[in-house]
Length: 497
Image 1 (cartoon, helix red, strand yellow):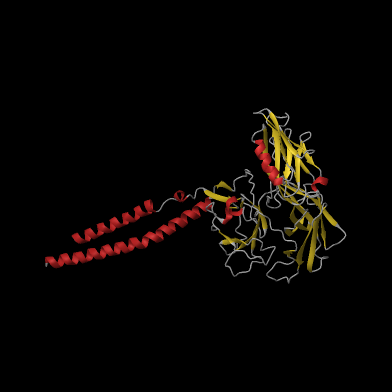
Image 2 (image 1 turned 90 degrees about the vertical axis):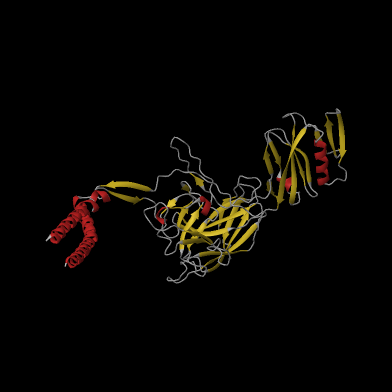
């Protein structure tokens, strides 16, 4: 009898334990945040395949990366199919909305993408073709309002004003290519603004210009004289007096072909004959004389070339709803010099200008040539470029039309060859200009209170999950305890007998 009472007490204790589990282990709905629901709204712009993206901006790229977790840049792949280059591969984060590091909130970072502007493709392996696997197109700078009232390729930018004037960024056309401190093409004059009275000396292999004086703050060497000089590398020496706008103590006398100079230490005038001296020997003599005079000087590199022009890129783009060839290239003629492009030697030319603000860099140009693909027959076509002062270049491109289900997109324009290749020395470097722009954050957190029905549904769901988790375990535990007690009671009774 005593054993039965003990077993009944054990059952009572187990029942109370089950009640405690339901009260304390199964939490209320508020413990699961059901009373208030936080929804993450993604305001990051979602791009489509081939969309243009800009450095240091955030995008949702989940729709353009396909099944791959990598993207690759192939250099000139999109414009020169035969150009062999090892791809630059970038591993992408996963697709999750719960973290800012994901393809839904992907930043086109300056450090990763600015050295590799252009088309980026989905990457699976080295054997796959890349025709319509393009993910996006990286541009280094986002332009302000683009004013394109003509097709000359002259691009201007609107300046906005919201209490502080924003300076428009310099448009990126081609990488800067430095040749010298000063680069001049024959047919252009040499014009240099100076802040004080200055004399210019120019030393070449056989040609020279000695003691050329500035006038009204400008050294202005006419193009007629420049055309008499042989192309090549020169040394430019700019001489200034020790006391601004005072008389020089070193001068060249063209009548005697001598350098006359005043030595302030001995207070005497000396004469250095240049008879039979080459320009380079004269330069060394002049340096030695300056050490004992009161004048100052600076030396620069000066490059004189025949007029030239090259075509570096041809891309098919759309401007104001019109299909155009975006033609870009370098030239050495003076900024502002007219440049004309002709398609297939027809009678119509498209006009632009050389641009550039560094006197020692190659100038560049960008000109739009309208095309109508329906009227342009398939095959090889030619763009010719020339400057107003001389120099010309030709570049071929292919227009091809492929079946609608072709792996390569239809009506793709491919730049295949430059019949006048130009290889710069030194190798050009991509100069990145970074503009910091404050933009709104990509994620907005909105607090939403759910309906009562939603709360009850979630509470029932949580309760059922907890009951089905704990009840079988409790029952099995109770059965185990009862069996153990029964065996213990049998043992005790057997021991008494």
